[in-house]
Length: 49
Image 1 (cartoon, rainbow, N blue to C red):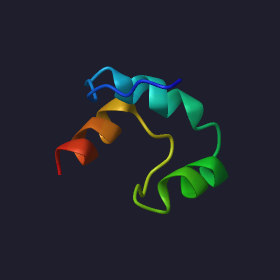
Image 2: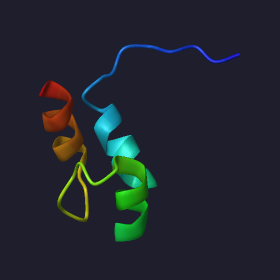
Image 3: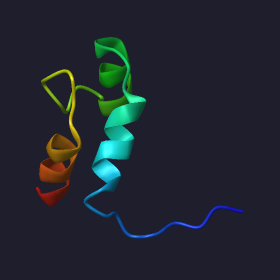
């Protein structure tokens, strides 16, 4: 069973840690982020949009 919870700012750093290459970034983000390496703050700022 999976339980979903609300996004927290610190989740961005965890997610960014999953991205190990520019190819991974493109596959994961569908080209929505235009910089590598991706940081937790980058993800958080996109979440606020």
